[in-house]
Each structure stands twice: as structure tokens, then as C-alpha cells.
Image 1: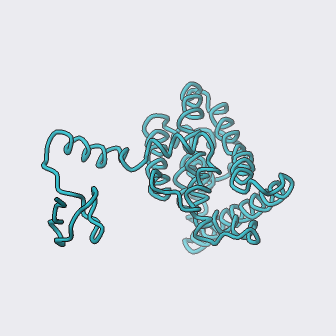
Image 2: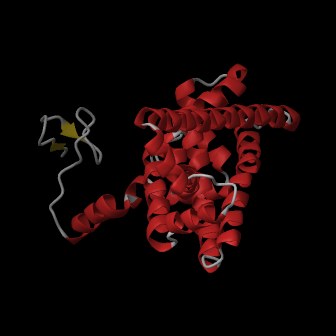
Image 3: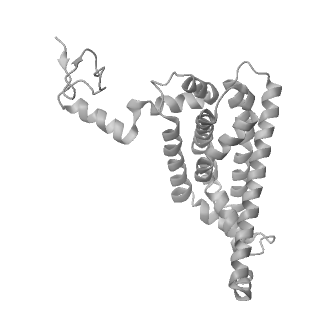
Length: 265
């Protein structure tokens, strides 16, 4: 005999009510508590580990499956990229001391004429993961422009970029961060590793979109990825220019004493 849903009274034939989707009644026991802990702490019952495994194996194919509607086993990509970026930021800030190392590196460079410039560059280098996370909507705009004729809307490109960033973050956590930890006492080597890891992005983009658009030729993928990189670099340079202009304006408003202070620092 079918159990009546305790929420709406509809007969429950399976594990969930077909009317309101409440889960079929089950007495709270050891297994129930364990399942709740998994959901609260690890979310493994919603595909967290499954999605990580699939993304590491083939991020482009995984994103295509999710966008095409095969989603039941997958962790939500937007939430996933938030979780992974949080983990990466914790490692870089608490374990690698990335901010302190980058600040030390840029202060040692003769071309850095002011403390503001050094602080800006160290911030951009130290918080790559969180900055990329915040920039996902902008990255999605660049890929949407570059791939505009291939049939996916802007919001689907947000999901694509969430998968791209998830893969990049996983590679950083598993491979790049251990290497950086080993060389953490050499600021020059440490900085070079961060730059090489960023150079991996175009390679990741080509692989991702070649697997996402399996029927498209590699040449077309390469040209469009070049377009994405060009738009991204242009946006980054614009950000640097705007940040410099804001700093200059603040200094000018404060007068010569503020300018003198910045030069001294």
C-alpha cells in the first residue's frame, strides 16, 4: 500500500512524492544522520566527488553533458566553482602565504616605483582563484562573443566557464600548489611558477572547447580561443589602466604631500 505524503497527502509510490517532491518518510537512524552529514559537509550525495572525477578526466565533455540535460549525477557547476575557489584561496592564503611572498617579490623589483603598484600586482598575483571566480561573468562574455555563431546563449557560457575554472582550480590544488610549497623560500622561482600556471589557461581552453564542440575543426577552435585570449588581455589591461587612473586621481586630490608619501613608500 502506498504511503501518503506527510506534506500534501498525495500517495508516494517511489522515494519522492510526485506532487511536492518531499522525500518518502523514513525514521531517523544512523544511516539518516550519516547521509545528512555527507550532504552538509561534503555534498557527496549530490555528485561532488563524481563531478570532480569527471572534470579532471574531461571538463569539456562533462560541461556538454550538463548543458545538454544529463544533470542528475552532477554537482551544480556554479556551487562547485565556489567551493573549489574557497579551498584554493584557503591553501594559498593560510598554507602558502602567497600574499606575503608576492609582496616581497614585487618590493624587490627595481621597476616598482611606488608601494601602491607593488601592492596592486601582489594582490592580483596572490588571489588569482578568487579574482577569476568573480570574473566568470566577464569570461563568459568573451567566450560568448568568440563562439557566438555556435548556438549557445550567454548563461550556458557561464556554466562552461564555471567548468573551465573548476578544472584550472583542481589542477592548481593537486599539482601547482605542492610545487609552489616546495619552492616557497625562493621568491623568484615561486613567482615564475605562478606565471607558468597562468600560461596553462590557453591550453586548457583549446582542450575544453575541442571536447565540447566535438564536430568542429581544431583550426576553428584555435582561432576562437585566440579571440577569447585577446579579449581577456584587453579587459585586464583596461582594469590596470583604470586602477592606475583611480590611484592617480586620489593622489592628486590629496595634494603633493600624498604624492610624496607614495614615492617614499
